[in-house]
Image (cartoon, rainbow, N blue to C red; front, side, top):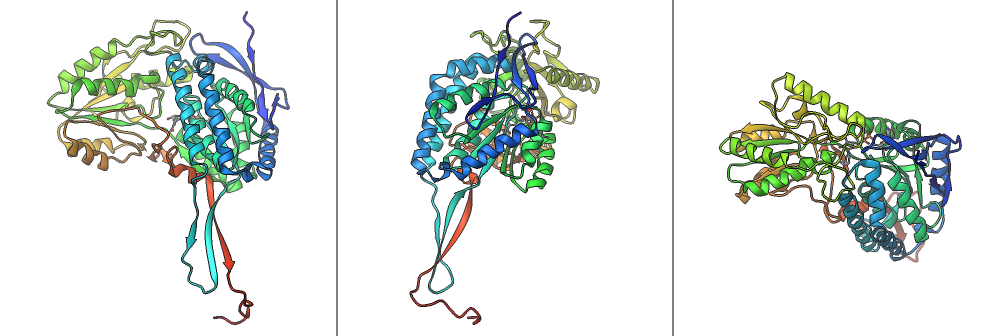
Amino acid sequence: MTKLKQYKMFINGEWVDSESKKTFETLNPETNKPWAIVPEASAKDVDKAVKAAQKAFEGEWPKLLPRDRGKFLRDIGNQLRENAEMLGEIETIDTGKLFRETKKQANYIAEYYDYYAGLADKVEGTVLPIDKPNIQAITTRIPIGVIAAIVPWNSQMFLTATKLAPALAMGNTVVLKSSELAPAVIFEFAKLIEKTGLPKGVLNVVTGFGDPCGKALTTHNLVEKIAFTGGPETARHIIKNSAENLSEVSLELGGKSPVAVFDDAKQDNAINGIVAGVFGASGQSCIAGSRLYIQKGIYNEFLSKLVQRTEKIKIGAPMDSETEMGPLSNFKQLQIIEKNIKRTIEKGGKLKCGGKRHSFSNEGYYFPPTIIECDNHNLPTAKNELFGPVLSVMKFDTEEEVLKQMNDNQYGLSSGVYTSDLARGMRVSKAIRAGITFVNTYRLISPSAPFGGIKDSGYGKEAGIESIKDYTRVKTTWFYTSDEPSLDPFSMR
Ligand code: NAD
């Protein structure tokens, strides 16, 4: 039997087991076998991590020149670039995501650290046009304190960067909770952080389950802000938890993103965008464009081309450079997908391709890209977030009709429009209730592009210039500017 890789948590600059010595195994989705063993944090471990972060916040870190904090961020970016191959491999083993994607992402995520390094010394305050004589008042932006950053298993490096980079740039300290489903890459990342010489306690990493680890973190009285990415059910717990410590909360949640293809769309471009948007990362992306509306003039032709292209997707081992789709990350996900497909077919949905567990491996969580034609978008696969490679397809007639349908869902994260009429692209984009709209493209991210949703997809944006301010609080300072004594305190002038 191969020996399992052992990880430790990173608390106050030291590598530690959990106090209880409890551990859990993380599975390789390609084989369904454990490959690494990680500590399971209890409330005591979380308390240690938060106190270390608080101590670091009371130390030199927030007092450093912003430019000097920026230098640490650039070092983190460089570490990511230099170790992209290793990080990619570990993330692939733990999540089943394609190696060529995880490696590329590790490289690209370095840009987020560069971006916020550049912004570290560009956050300014204001001089207030105050309505009182002999008074000057200003506002400055101050760091918040200890930030609890909580990430789900998919794209942990990206979702960590969008929280950690602005938080550190502004002088906060962080306790990062990785997902229990794929924690390994975050430990490897913490090893790289250690190499940069970041002061002790500025970043702490804990692993464990929602309860007790996540709960202890989000209720801790020293935590001032919770930056959460995950599902809406967990978000509801987190909001309740934050009533204990009155911390600020930002939420990046799920999606059931609609995509409309109009008769005048460039079809080959639309097909590429749709396939990338819903089958990339085996559909395990929060912005997956999983509800497709095709205009009736091209419906049959377009759907048939889309099915043909989808059937060509090469499924295989995630480390193989030829593979286009790897396994799902966990067995629970596979079961949810199967259940939703079964119920949709029972209610009249027509399977166009995929739909059954892939025979590629009896052990790994392989599921083929699946397209289901639905006569309405209330069928389960068209309505629920599945977090898997399943596309539900509906027909529409007019722009007005499709807009109504696109907006008829609890989520509002992403959306897409394919049309050669740019005026229509702009109109539809304005009318869609979603945080992101892609016109004639899909599945793009950038450090300078705000990312996040509305409705049940959460609140608070990550990435972009504005989000750095979310890691600060406004402070008002009043100056008395006269040499004369101030007014008699009992005169009410
Ligand atoms: P999840 O909500 O189950 O878990 C996310 C994290 O929350 C994990 O680290 C988990 O341990 C932690 N957690 C669970 N219970 C908790 C509690 N009571 N208190 C504190 N923390 C707790 O999500 P998941 O299944 O890992 O990920 C999939 C979900 O994440 C999907 O809904 C997906 O759309 C969403 N997601 C959103 C974005 C985005 O940016 N909008 C990006 C990626 C994933």
